[in-house]
Image 1: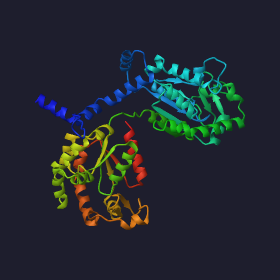
Image 2: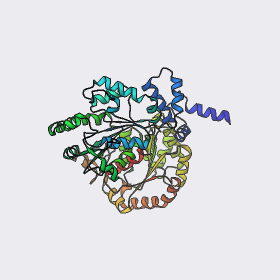
Image 3: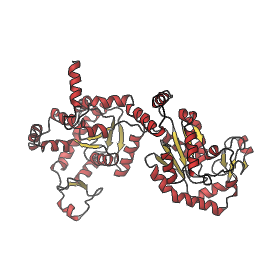
Image 4: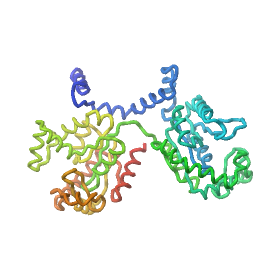
Length: 478
């Protein structure tokens, strides 16, 4: 039995077998123990920090209380509230709060613009490599301010996991800059209108301007506007530099609401597990469209069961000919053949490495249980839609026989009159067939939900972009 198991594994990973396939249980084990996240964290840390003794470094890395050490940037224009958010965030996360003032110490140059960029980045790099930042993580406030600075920090090995960009209208920021109040004991910054302390004793000792730098106190209205204009010119580049780890938060709202949004974002962890996504839903719920959007953005393999069966049927293989005979007779392909096709396809290297999105299967309890045995999904979503809307959607859709693309008279019209004129309605899209398919789906929905009790449920009776945002937010959350 052991020899047989070994040979089976060896065959699945044999480079002489094309296309290459990987055992499905390897991905399941990696998910259970966060292996991909662990390996990526260690590898990226080695490449970025380049320690002289890699083994000792990795041992120290693994001895930390958590692999999820916060690495956060809090950015934004002057007076947007960076200090308040960063200070509170670092206290809650027990991370080190790093500011330009703490980096410059008691030196006379108290401005990041006066200090040469290479010196500033060297100090940031040195500070973030100190033992407290290494073990507890860090929240870096106010730096970088330009795309060039962001790229320089990346080259220096400062790679944040979360970047928070606070934004507010210029008139709000100018008003805030005029009314700053400082607690002389803690250095916390408040404002008469926007952020006022709840503690009356703190409110009594606030002083206007004290604790602010000489540069901040001496700025004229024109200079403040110029600073805001400079930020507006640079912010597009900053967003581009950190687009994959960025959260833009509207700071023109109560401070508590701003902070809760920031905290919720920072607590999300972008795990490195390979996505194996299953989309379930009635006909007309938009499974194919959402799968295409996810595949396009995240480079996952879009696996439509129906299209996959037709593709295999057309390849001339013995299995394909057997499947074609069922398609020609208009009969459902037996589960044994469908599972054989899926097991082979989902074991390919592209699916194993990039992940996959499956839709069109399973349709009942037995199929779902069988899928769990060969390639269990790690994210399942039920796309929810009423029967009336399903029928309405399907009755207005048609397929382009040339490109194979599906269009809808309302939500996704044909791009040209030429395409519109050649659109065909599939026989299975007539009202009678759709009603029967819906009835079958509703019959098996409860059983499918028992197999996937932790699945997400998405209301898809809204525009496709909003549905995609809902799916995306669920995928990126813990």
